[in-house]
Image (cartoon, rainbow, N blue to C red; front, side, top):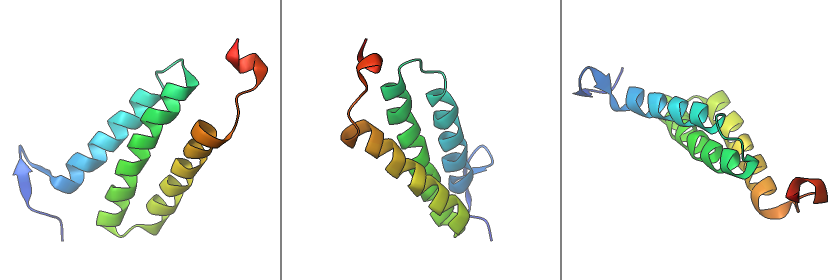
Length: 85
């Protein structure tokens, strides 16, 4: 059963899914890899929420994995000397 509509025929579930998709697409327009990863992480977190609302483990597992990879490269991995230039 789908959630109740809250505005213009969109359900909260639909809204979160569209917002997550938009943010994910927006992340790929960034030239700076750090900015790409930050924005991509936000989109993936929204997809985790979306997957949880759908009880969809493939969506949850995939996006949690991407969040962890992004966090690794943002905070743990040291940048290569060539990336700094």
